[in-house]
Image 1 (tube, rainbow, N blue to C red):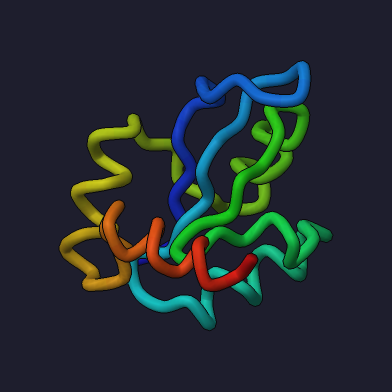
Image 2 (tube, rainbow, N blue to C red):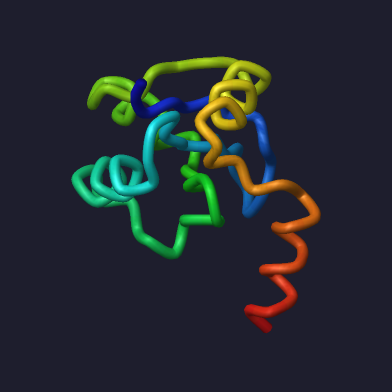
Length: 95
């Protein structure tokens, strides 16, 4: 159980991005993110998007590096994964 981070591979805004998740609780995820100075605006329903420049410091702070498949597998197993359909529905209600 813990905080997981995948490799920076998702391009946007001139950099690559990683996903930061917890495989046990959103409370744990928010606490870790806050302790590392990650703004709450980076939270997207079940993960934080974090820029490549933060990857090494987050791993040094205790985030476990995993590949994307491993991240999704463990997030699903935790019950915290927000499905694509639900993600779209919630995004539509934010606007």
